[in-house]
Amino acid sequence: MASNVDGYVPASAMVVVAHPDDAEFMVAGTVAKWARRGAEVTYVVITKGDKGSEDPEMTPSRLTAIREAEQRAAGAVLGVRNFEFMGYEDGYLQHTLELRRDITRLIRKYRPEVVMCFDPTSRFISDFYPNHPDHRASGDATVDAVFPSARDRLTFPELLTDGLQPHKVKQLWLGNAGQPNTWVDIAETLDLKRQALLKHPSQLAEDIAGFADQFARWAAQGQEMMFAESFRRIIFDEPFATPATRATGQA
Image (tube, rainbow, N blue to C red; front, side, top):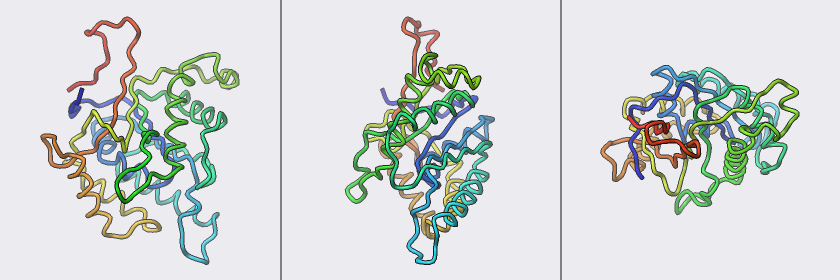
């Protein structure tokens, strides 16, 4: 069922993406809205973003440092409190047990109410953009880390040795979803989304702000709002929860 969750604000949210700047495209308006209302937001960037340059003088190590600084600056615009850079190599990401365990570790460390990541089923974003393989791999690993790995005590028992207890994420929000069921009105934070995107000059030209407007208008089509970010939203209910006790998150 489609829903408008304008009044829903989680206590904490974790955004897991493949590259620096991915989060700004996918969730920046929602993140800024939630952070403004008191949510503690954590960014997890899986790869170093060390391949995104056509400059023949650029090196992977230098680009890594540049892109991490850009990501921190962009997150600061939005009110992101915590950053984790996992250090995987850009362009080669695979959905491995090691990656799933590393994401599980961070979920158990920060214990977010909501996890946001790429929808791994989106193979083509549009008629002109096939989804990046790192996006799909990061989404697959994150979904599996949320359910069941972070929840199940006997999965990755080495995490228990490190003092990281199981954690049940309440909601999973998938961005760039082919079949969204949830829309967030980002009119009040669209300018912050623009500003955050402009904090990535190594990757994005200044006209990216106009693209952000167009994409937000496109995402809002069919909804009673002008600018939106859309998601496929999954709510984890207890097996025999009654309607009154379900965490619907509705406004």
